[in-house]
Image (cartoon, rainbow, N blue to C red):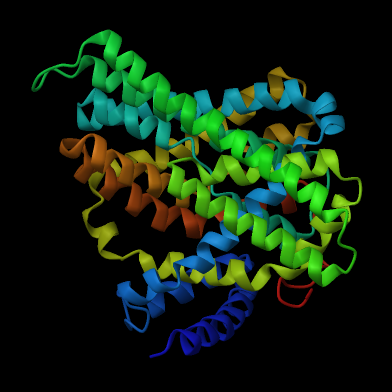
Length: 402
């Protein structure tokens, strides 16, 4: 089956799936994900592994777009208002999640290395799933604003924590020939610095180019072509240079929002043109996972999944209360931070190349947990923003707003 035909089938079935889950009061993204499961190897195998790999460019574009738009949160004026508060509340959520998962896995698995690595991977939150639900609900208010702010910072913190965790595991490994401490510290610091600082530099430089070039382009269609082209270049260059496309695209958006006054309108335009890409992203994500992951997830996997949810809710509740956030934020923030996907899977794959002996158990737990959280997470997010009173139900569906 041709890829063009597959894309057409994916879009139409995603539209149908998004509407079919509405009577269940589930967000459309759950319908997209379930369509992917039905099309993938777990059921019909219409979307084979090769087909998913061939269409992966759509997922790259979708992820780049959403992270580019999250970057707009780093506007200097907004940072002055919420910068310190955002860092602190994100720190509480990260600490609550990591500590709960680490202690749970240490008890169930017995390996501190596995518990530590899973503890930091658990920090990750799927930005696309969360933001699609917020868009669908047309939510607005202190809870929604806090969610966006946390999404902008959280996964950067996750990558930094993962770098520290891998350093600690390497440092205390006793198998084989241990690397000298000075050499190990130098190597890990280099890779961490290159991954974070290098990604920010690439995003900032690209943002300057985009801002200067964008001032010379007036027609909306040409502006969209320019922005999309720059996002793809940045994502591709990040992979080529061994950088984080997550950080790079956010830095690109942050640079543009601070350099070009007219860029806010551009972000609004992008928000109205990207729903088909997000639908393809989640259908492919569903097709890429297998139900067999649930069969082998085991007690440790269940413990990881439950502990992660408890840790996020507890960390968000305690942090919001301590920092004097409004009541809806302390009550419902943790529920909105459950979606778990792309970055977590990417980190699990990195574990495979860095620590092969821990890779099987970590990959199995992560894949099984992602399968559960990509369905449960958006439902919890929709419930939370609805209970907080920040939704406007007259908002139309994702595809209807185009």
